[in-house]
Image 1 (spheres, one colour):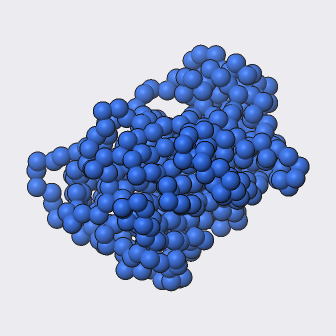
Image 2 (cartoon, one colour; image 1 turned 90 degrees about the vertical axis):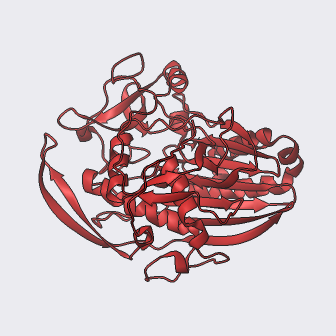
Image 3 (tube, helix red, strand yellow; image 1 turned 60 degrees about the horizontal axis):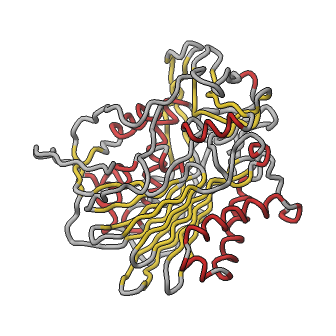
Length: 458
């Protein structure tokens, strides 16, 4: 359901703007744990952050509307400097007189960045060739485009080995009256609005084991807010443990299981494995590419949803899991509403090597920088790499009144979302490989792990 909060008590004063200054160096006191998971020491890790490889901010004249649209891609980073991580995120938008098509792809595997770039070329071609299909049957276009990306990727002419490489995908088509969405994987779209729809376009994401770390991140960033807007999820995340997805995977001969550490503790997300092999270890049930996983129930068919636009709609955010792993829907919605009016518009770059703040960049980069800052808490707790982070922000309506503000209220640890099946409970949820059985440094957060793939991928 929509995330609506209304606090009656007067919030304590806090200079929230000071939270939105992002230096180009980072320092994280990483917790060191023994085999039982007990913290025995800390090791301070210092590093330079990566600069964005994409920034855009433009005003679009669409029907009788003026829409501000901005985008940003921040490459991930290994704070310890042990791995060179390729950026595998890609996002773009295409427009004509009938609507705006926004696309975001998050690659994984050894050639994930090639897959994400390949999909952009396919979508751009279809946008020019199939305009009538997109206008009259948006869902058919989205399904055709996704399946075309997948089928063309399998051909030798693609030049990409997609056996263990692929990407998530989100396509959102905005017209003057409707929003049509399609997604594969765990990249996501959400809407900030003052009006809760009678029927939600998609259920809120099941946070599962991420709930506790997200609450800790909020607390550390003092990111608890009073808001009069609703953060409505537009797309549905597809996880292997979801009942429908699990049933299909098991029927195709796959199994779904979390990894275990050397002490037998369950870690990271549920993953898709072959029945008798520790591969491919994919942390999603639908994707483009990942041809080995396609033999065990992973599919490329997108889940499509729609939403009828209202006068209360304020903005749309499309982002990769680099954002959603560090911020939930409500946090993203209220953050955008707090700060979007303060940011620069009409820019396509940001000064390199200088502190990022409202005065020198757009709201899309500010959101990505904030997500990266929150990753510091995740790194502190889990000693993982910081993921690639990308987003597109469409500002549909700007009002003088800001409908959200910061507060220092304590963070509630409410139990939200459906319970996921315990390991071993039910067919298909079998014994998972341990860390000794796979070659990967941070399996808690990677999209794909396998005993067939050396080193860290995705």
